[in-house]
Image (cartoon, rainbow, N blue to C red; front, side, top):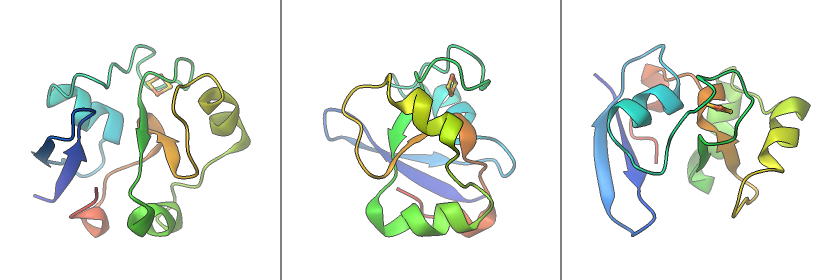
Length: 102
Ligand code: FES
């Protein structure tokens, strides 16, 4: 199974087995990453799944049918500490090509 690494707010890395086809919000929420709540269940209505994709991975994520939409950008406006590679985890679908994602 592919793995992702989450760098938590305190700087602690956490390696997580990532089920293909699930969203990064579902994967990180179910792995008890405290910063990821996913309150709206993935309907792009809460921004509590805000995460920052490592710049090394940002283009690859988008190229794998995970393009950032205008609606996602609007929702990210409500999140804190947004940066260029900020994404809503519910809008990124895990695939084997993302094995190693940070
Ligand atoms: Fe609510 Fe992603 S889970 S916007």
